[in-house]
Length: 96
Image 1 (cartoon, rainbow, N blue to C red):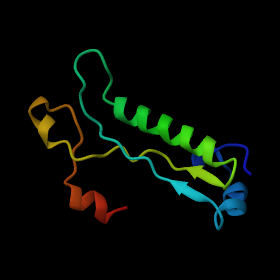
Image 2: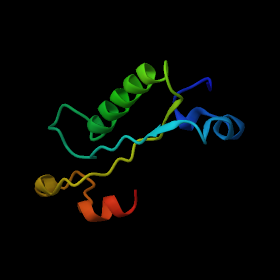
Image 3: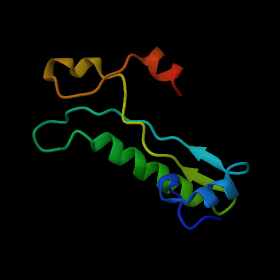
């Protein structure tokens, strides 16, 4: 098993070692406002934490690697605030 569960922290050789047998977790989250008290990356931070927690549990039985968070969601309901990145769902699904 590699030294880290995070794909972004692995070297080329470490990725090559686990690539064909590991399960890749791809966390996705919106980049949007949550009021004046939280950063726009709140959802991404939570998604990465959940993915890492799940990977830590699963890695006891199977090889697992967590990809970097895809920080795009469909957040059209926040458009009025102009503080988000929103992508229509068919476009997000098409590029995954």
